[in-house]
Amino acid sequence: MNIIENELTLMCDVDDTLVMWGQPISDKTVEITCPYTGKIEHLVPHETLIQILKQQKGRGYHVTVWSAGGWEWAKTVVIALKLEKYVDEIRTKPVKYFDDLQAAEVLGTRVYLPYKETK
Image (tube, rainbow, N blue to C red; front, side, top):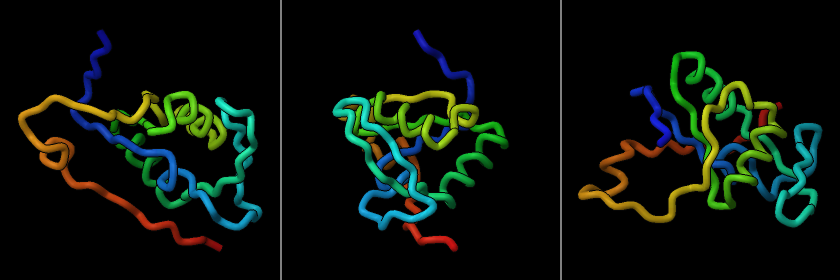
């Protein structure tokens, strides 16, 4: 049994959250090889969100990165972005849950930061 003994938790998605799809290739683009297909993807890191993730880790948060694309994809992105020392846990995004409360009541406020290209 894996017990996380931290009341401060942060859950962060990968696709179109940590890395952005469909952006033009630039000097900020990171090449990431898909662990499932071997295809090289050109993705842009969401630098603002990455800075917030690092700050929250510095403030004592337990950081989990997850992806509907699977834990291997999430791990590959974390490594490509050199975030290993800021991420405590990597997992597949949950697809089902049992609870008497709706996810919004359990997880609290959803935070989404739209991507804005930084110069």
